[in-house]
Image 1 (cartoon, rainbow, N blue to C red):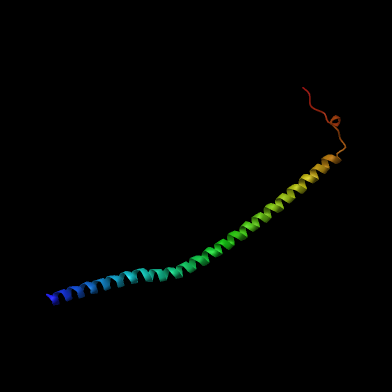
Image 2 (tube, rainbow, N blue to C red):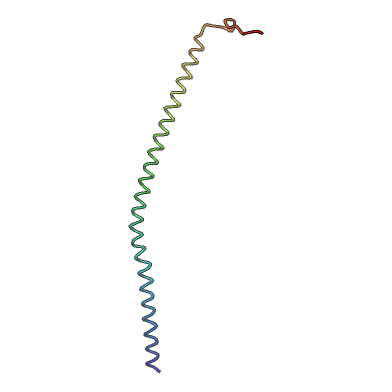
Length: 96
């Protein structure tokens, strides 16, 4: 009976060891592989973030340039209107 008990114990420990090695290798190997993927993902994310920052900067610069051009156009039009010597009496309205 003692031998049977020892063999049962040995069989249990062997099975538990095999199961833990399978679980261990099943969880560690993908985790190690994921580290490499994570580094690639991180690099890809950083390049996408850098590109997005560059595009955002370019758009904001374009918006600033557009606003400056709009302000200049408004000032030119205001000066034209101010320098126009005509009055309301210089215009005629069609009457029916």
